[in-house]
Length: 424
Image 1 (cartoon, helix red, strand yellow):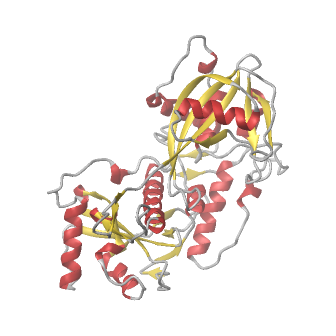
Image 2: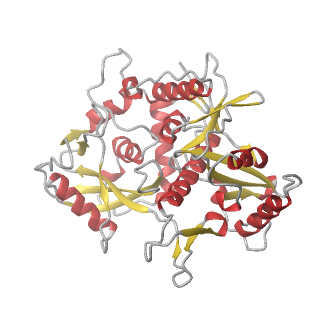
């Protein structure tokens, strides 16, 4: 059986696969010039390349959903609309009709398509139905859980939505120059901004906030350190994490955050992989989760109650049970059904955390985040692979991680999952 899990959720965006030269008709500036010509001519027809637009409202991308069958849940898709339909949003908004409203996402030159995003929060125009498809603005976190991670196309759409949301949110919080306070204006098809003050003209680019996330391992007793936070759903345990301080290396951040939150000293820090995370606070449009393993030098836990609810050592077997008990497929099915109901105008409002139950329907003692989170990959790699306990291991190449992921996914989910489909 072939399982596609080459990258984390929100990674693998196909629109960011190459950098186009300025003269290319699909490059940001060339596409923007074409867009300007269309708006000036007011014809909205005959554009080459073709434009597809993804609207956002209050940080939620437009989505549509296909119907479900007895064997599979509904499947969501991004709600791409035509340039003409997107102009209908802008005409009725406070923004007005302007090329500055469009943010370049990328292109598929082989398909003669350029992709854009627009923020339509200032308008109440509806696109609930177009042809035989029904649309709705859906939280990206809901789409994240609803995505079948064995479906390569679905993972690509999630990555595109994450990239677009990060840019939309960045534009929202960078309306003024941090140097002089004047308004900023979009440049290069929305890929950067510039201060409108002629004496300043400061260039402003989207930023990524790095976050270290680490699985701390007790080599001698074959245990892992997991934490519980107040923002987690009940019974969920995960890795430690924290932001990088100015002037600090990634390894230094791992050591400092682990010590500050749990009083544990660590050594032998090993890189695992990284994941874009555009579903954090709106003040941080996109975080980059940088994952590590770290071996403990000390074992006595002293929890910082301002940061964590609790932190405990968990045996490999206990964590293995948490992996096998959590019905991630059930949560995915529930979220996909929720998206479908929302697009039909009948939102059920179910609590997804209630779907992490064992087959006996009794609550699990603990569970860890699902495969959409890098924490899951860190924990499952440790549970299912003995490589970290081998003497002399100093580093792990990120390129080999996909093989690790495929192995644990196949081990746990082949009886329940096939590519693109969740089985009963």
